[in-house]
Length: 136
Image (cartoon, rainbow, N blue to C red):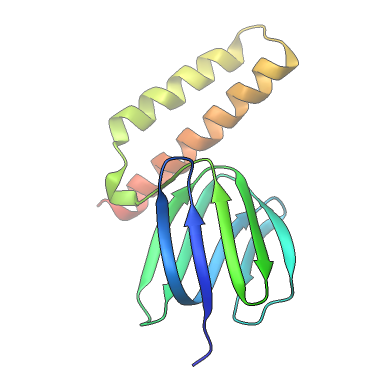
């Protein structure tokens, strides 16, 4: 069975490290799948859900913030702002963050503040989607 080494690094911890069969990441232009012996490249990653198929076939789901993935010589490194498992997300806090971001978007802001509010809203919505999808 073909595998590749994957390391998923968030700002404050290592989310996953080991051999795996496949990785799916949320890219700017849609989901991207990475398999063993993938062409070397760098891909920008959006807020959303990653799916890691480990060497033993188990699938690990993670909700990640923006970042990028680097593929070199059958080794993949995913660097993101945040990475958390759906079961670790507090739905109440995510809903509050969504409401705060929406309120900030309604107010007059500089372009930089607007983009920051937009990113906060996207992150909150990704987290809420994960809690409704996986924490039933």
